[in-house]
Image 1 (cartoon, helix red, strand yellow):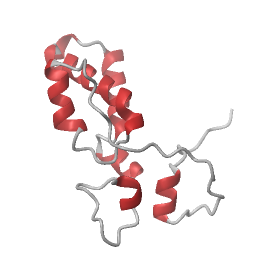
Image 2: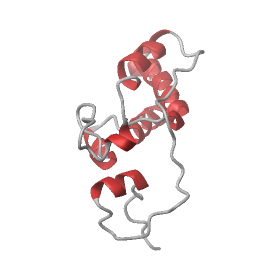
Image 3: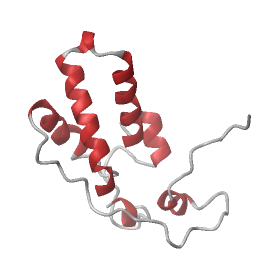
Length: 129
């Protein structure tokens, strides 16, 4: 059985980091635009978590809206009953958080830093806002 290796890096990050593998850049690569929009049906603690964690996450795009909403709902569920949440749900919460860049290693993988990228002379500003 062959191993898959590392996850593919998004095209934008390949361009910013210099395309170390020197592989061809896809011409028709989808480019999700805009920030994720807070769903209207997100209420209570989940809505607060959106404002606290999702809104400042400048690296997220509109395409991440549903995944971010799921993370907010699961995190709110965790806060509501910490000791009663089953391991599978906690695993889903951790996986979503990692995919959204909420832990240090995933932020490194995504190429996100601690703050908003500077607009001047920053090649990433075209892709990250």
